[in-house]
Length: 296
Image (tube, rainbow, N blue to C red):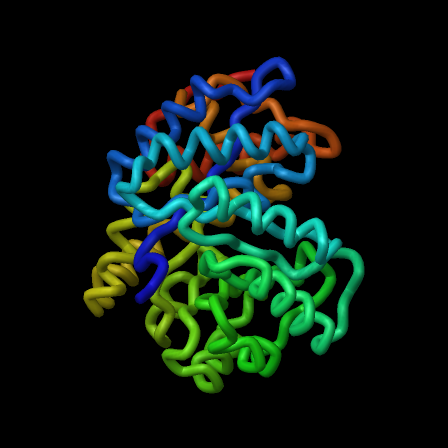
């Protein structure tokens, strides 16, 4: 049984005065739960976990799990470039009651393909919670090849892969090699349509932080094979998605959420800073028809 089908939001983590802003997080979660998303990803890359303390990560995870209250799955980020640290994160996520964990390929180390297999098997062996592989070579420096996904397909509790290489052909090769042995989730918002059209069952989305209902309707249409409706929705999203990734994520999406009043501050911890290409984001948000106010 799939961990989820449709849209999972890769949640931003609101900060204010250099502390986690739980009031804004509460409001963000309310909006997500009210607008049809199918799962939440907490402490993933979009949540800035690398700049958070262990206690902050734990408190954010607890808060989200309690807020979701079993209505939709909560998947916790548990990746690290240290396998033993990733195991600790995974085991803690299981204890906290996560429905699954998202484990990014080790960044900077540039592990070999066989080392990736060993890394993921060690993590899967340490827990019983479902494991989602996460391939995002643009941020980690290593591309997990489809053949490597196939080597992990069917291993214990490895149930899915979030594919964010930006390559539709790589997504197709995963489906060709693995079939229904592993669930495929799109990790590039702009490629959701082709990914799901070739057999993916959902997306882990940054964009759905600010347009959860719209994005969810697109993935729902894709699941129902209503391709005409889904295609038009994807086309309409293109410029907004482009703007949300014109600087390193989550800088633009956090800025947009602040302008829309979803969160109370666009504060980001170094080495991220406030958005510079604000005119690009403003134009795309206006074109999409969002209600917002540009704030300093």
